Image (cartoon, rainbow over all chains, first blue to last red; front, side, top):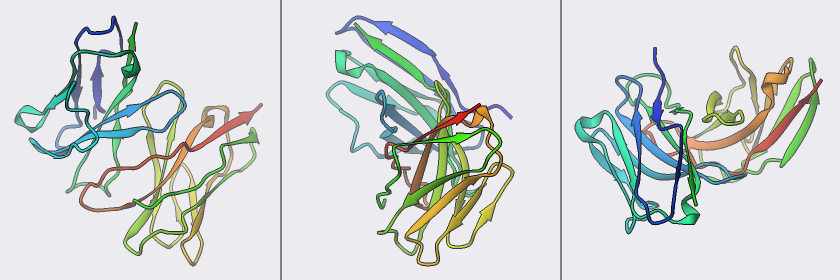
Length: 115
Length: 111
């Protein structure tokens, strides 16, 4: 079974440019999470989806960050415009409310460098 | 989610048991103890979880104290591939609530 797939794996952009990250969760997982991980820190939740609905986006900086999960499957996280402080790893995870015991499965992450 | 306290770093000799402690003194009755680990340049990986009984799987064992205020993750025969950051998290199991990560314990396995 394929795991959570994220792309791109690495992205280097100049400040003020836009960037987008894509996530394909594990098939059948209804819950999708985007986390931000700064160097030396644990991941921090940006947004959580239940199917198509964003049920927790309180930590998403909505002035420059946006996310969508069309059809309740794949998701895209966008930053526009990017700032130097956005350099980090963006992790996507998924889980199921009907299968397993609530564990989250993470992708390998997308490492963003803003110059 | 309740907060957890873990040592910043630990070393363990290859082939020995690695015992990683975690304090969660404010854990609620409906919160489970989860352990994840993150190997360099990878996403976090689920290891094990438990409520109040000791648990064991193919990766590790989890020992939870009777008062549930602390726990220990045990890797019985550590290998170099176990070098990673280990996160202890308390969380309600259902409802797919978020995982709240701390800074974890950086475990280094020494050859």
